[in-house]
Image (cartoon, rainbow, N blue to C red; front, side):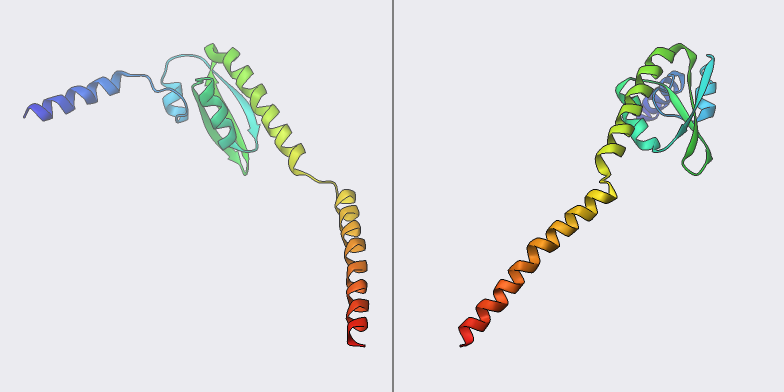
Length: 132
C-alpha cells in the first residue's frame, strides 16, 4: 500500500515538471511560451548532439526526406543561434574532410600503377634468369 502511494506521488511530481531537450511539437507548444522555427536540411542526429550540449528545448517536424522544421523556444534564441552555428561548422568540416577530388584519386591510381608495373617486370626477369 505504501509503495502505491509513493508511485502515485512520483507520477504527480513528474507530471508537473516541464520537459527539456528534444521533445514532440505538442509538448513544446504546451510550455506556454512563444516559439520560433528554422528549416533544417540534413542530419538531425548530429544536431541533436550539439543541442544537448547547449541545453536547448526543441522539436523536429519532418516536412520531407532529410528536411525538417526545427521549433524552439523564443526565449532561447541566443542559445539556439550559437547551437546552430556550431552545428553548421560541424557539417561543413565533415563535408570537406571526407571528399577527395576525382583528379587526385586518378593521380593516386596512376602513381600506384606506375609503381606496381616495374616490380612485376623485374620479377619476371629474375624468374627467367633463375631458370637458366
